[in-house]
Amino acid sequence: MTSTTPDQLQLGPSDAPQRLVLLHGWGADADDLLDLGNLLVGPQVNVVALRAPEPHPYGSGRQWYDLQPIDWSQLPAAREALRLRLETLAGSVPLANTVLLGFSQGGAMALDVGSSLPLAGIVACSGYPHEGWQPAALQPPVLLSHGREDPVVPFAASEEVQRRLEQAGTKTALLAFDGGHTIDASVLPHISAFVRQSLGTMG
Image 1 (spheres, rainbow, N blue to C red):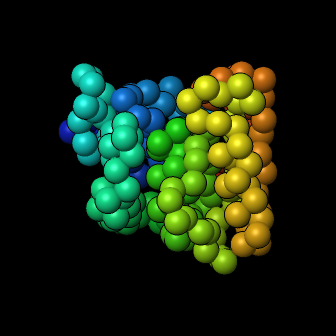
Image 2: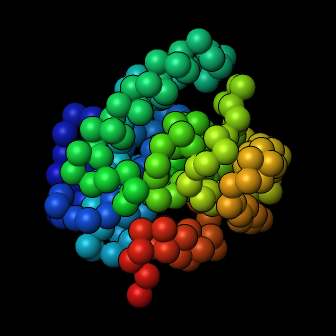
C-alpha cells in the first residue's frame, strides 16, 4: 500500500519497527526510487521516499540544491532541512532502526547528513562528497555503489568517499560495476543484504 503527502511517498506499514528512507537524484522526484523498496526489504519494513524541496530549474523534477552550476551556499539550508525531516520521521521509527539510501545528489545528501546521525546504515549510489565534507569518527556503516563508466558523477568520486570513510575508521565497502549512472541490477542483492543486515531483518 502506498500513501502520499506533498513531500514524501510511503510503502508498507506506517507502524513498522524498521524503515528505509530513499533520497532521489537531481531532476527526479520521490517516486523515482520507490520501487527499490520492494526489491531491497520485506513487506514488514516501512519505506519512505522523500521529495527534494526545490524545483528543478530545467522543467519537471526536484533538486536538493542547485547543481548547474553548483551553489554550495545552498548546502547548509538543504542539510538542515533534511536533518529535520529525518528527526521528524524518528518520532515513529528510531534512527537506530533506519537505513538511509540515496542516489547521485541524493547519495551526496545521505552521506553528508546521515554521517552525523545515529542511523543503522547508509547506502550511497553514484554519489560524491560535498565540498568540505569529512565523516565523523563514529558513524553508521556505509555501502557505496558506482559504475566505472559513469559519465555524470565520476567513479573516482566514490573512491574518494571510501578513502575518507576508511580514514575515519568507518566500516565501508564499494560495489563497482561495469556501467554508467544508475543502480545496476547486479548490485541490488548486495545492497539488499546490507540493508536487511543493518535493520536486523535477515531471512
